[in-house]
Image (cartoon, rainbow, N blue to C red):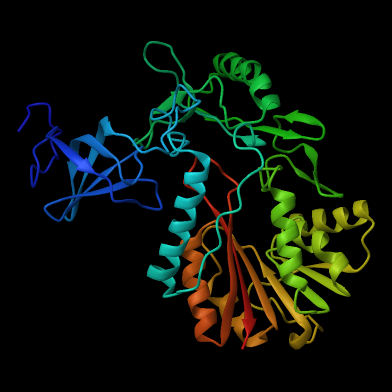
Length: 408
């Protein structure tokens, strides 16, 4: 075993920095290539299924090993030149080496596999809906920085690939909008300057949000974003989807799916600042947006006024009694849910199944937790009608997924 091996390195089944020729079989939903050596799994980043590569082992786990990509021996026809010089160093992107058409295929397969493995769901998944803008699409960037290094340098950017704390300096980001990249040098310079003055040694996170007003850097500032014909206001640091190029297409799809069976009422659970409630309101007699965050409800109410929409009301829902105040008959109601990454909590799932709406449209930023929740809905008497992923984050492993279910 090499002397440079880390102290905690386990030298079985491979020695440290042992090199192997590997044929990539598939990708995990984290973007790692899967190869096998005599049945033993070896994971390699930045590869495409079908490729032959040379990998160098750096860690052995109980049931698989991890290797660095050293060389591509036989490249896939879908391999392309990454546009970012920091690709493979910065941990922000996983797929810049892959044609966009292949990225969409792989993400579709990720969703299919997660549905089967975690949800026991064997329903066809439609091809991921691609982003009209593949680079320069991201309207929010949050670079991080730590305390200055011993040599006085202070990288401002994102975590290094494969590390938990080391930050790579990112002077420009090709998936961020042109306006953000234009503002980035001065924002980085100001952070370094003020850090020195205030002796802010612990580091922090910057915000650059490209909105109607321009690039905003103060989290508490009120900003506006246009989606289709509607304008939404919110605080710059708060959650709002950050690919404005594909967002109108996803919102239109959700509105069409929600109203396809002729339901007259819509409940938008986890409504946030009212994106789905207000965007789908024209298709329904009445809409109720429910949110446990009081500030978000206040923004949603303000956005209804800004948009001149009168058939939507927003309520602050108590987590244990989300549907308590609703007068909508379940037989004529669609529920749209767009929960945080962890999915719907158990209390919400139970309440939803006891309310039993005619139709559910489930929007998720994590198909793994979505598969778990949807499995429960199917067991409780719902049938899946469509599964449609949307690629809000080209070149990364992330995928948004929309599942429609009907009460059986």
